[in-house]
Length: 497
Image (tube, rainbow, N blue to C red; front, side, top):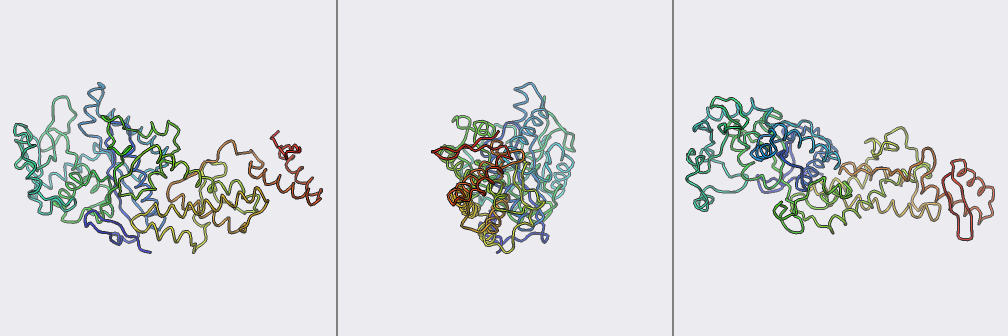
């Protein structure tokens, strides 16, 4: 079962082969921290979080880097409007980012470099570009001569001559920046300081870096000249990722990344999300409405990661229903495990910790469910296909739980049910789907609600069989746990003392 990925650079699906055997260097272009994260950020962060989890699941050692862009006109504009500073605005929204991602169950990256903390690497890279003839200064600015890089456009598929035909009508020849450039397509590596803005000293004068050079420098500083996976939203293919390639490869002469992966965009009710349309939804707004974070994850994972996805009330309702099904399966072991005589050993099963997790050594190998899951997901991270395995397991466990409650026994052996539950918990963990044990179903040291119902059914069967000793034993067992039974012509009711 070979993992194959669609590579934006080659426009085809290819077997995944890393630079270093067994190890993955992965970089995700993160957020510009001038506002709260929205649904588009949620999709991207969930997708690349699950990609990382899956690579680890199939045995890779993954070093995952995600940057923060903390130098940007939008940040400066917000700081000015709030009579604050760029640093204060960035710090505030970086803090908010971590809060939002924690609610979505996103695992933290190995490192979060910030542009302002990578200034030495940025200046060094610009200096190397200048020495190789791929940068020229102009009145305090420094520009990259796009036509100097013969492979420019190889990622996006755009050709300069085609873009030139439609660009003349959009160029403002009076623009001071345009007048500094040798060619309209050239882009800024360094921008001269403007009054009232933060600036850093450089050989070309005080100023700040351009957006594209920041990522090239952070990738190189943290992961080296060539990485395995460079990920980001499809909106970054051009010009951001195209320019990253031009900058980095002009200096190193090596591929910046072996695989370029891009997630599709999020629409809201069929339209592009924007503040002007009034359909701009932040992660915290959505979750504060009461939408379960796991339903958001499931909503994202039900679509192939490269395709656009449409956020609607109907879609999130369907994802919520789907999550309830998987959640029932994940809680099966907590509700029925003791009754089925399972030996859960000393592993961390989440009982009392809030989240269910499973030691990797607990599931059997080979396992047909895991094999099917892996075979499906290995096809360009086909997470929707992988989810079908989870739903199959969850529905089977729910069915067996219902049989157990109403008939006092299961159709499937206790050992097989334990294997199925362990498998479901394992695969759900790969997708970052975790079920919290709800407080109302917990007891400090006794039976869960479902277990009580099963005990009552077993007692009823004993009474029908005139096995009154067994009936009394079950009643006494429940009484010892603080549970009182009340028999009537309508059946047996119970309450906790």
